[in-house]
Length: 278
Image (cartoon, rainbow, N blue to C red):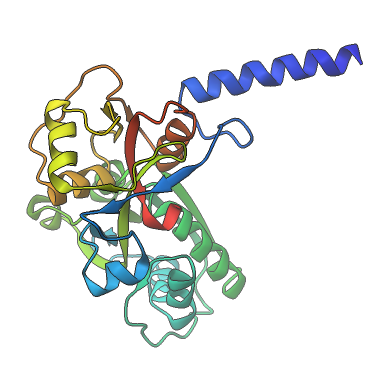
């Protein structure tokens, strides 16, 4: 029993440390989250698709050139746009693109390196698992390190394919080819203890730009610089600067934002994540 008590104390300490660092550690984060209406419209796939929920962005893959990819990388890119893969996109709560005809290249083999968006990452991992069961001769690694980092690594040739949850800039497109694999919404979230049900674009803009509190919300949580989710969020809201007062923290993954909002039992902070991550 003594050993169990010691183990419990160690686990509790580990959980406390993880929450304070906003690290997504299963079993540690307290509470739940809920998505808010934005300008009176619920954050749903249907509303993103019909255009009434306006916080949406593309999920993109990019590479130096399709023709320059290895046979294995080309085959995986082709698989992403197959009917099987796009059915998985829809099943995971995203909006699929038009499927393309696909036949497995049974001669393809080797390793493919992918990096980038933590929003696209979980979906990409699913697609990788499906693809590797179709073509076991190919092994694919996925590193979720943010859209900006992935794009940089694809540009310098460190990885074969980058994942981005924002449109590429003209400068980036001068070095890369891109293709959209899905559309995703951006959900604005609070702790489930909050009585808040709806936010307006004006409230969000004033909070993130100037620290202007509203209806019990005192701070806005952001993603790190270089995050595709952050870039898309700021562009869609029209945020031109980010307020950096107390509580206006930035985290380097979707899971970290979720963990921070779950542990915010006072329900006085707001954040944003991929709609597909709800």
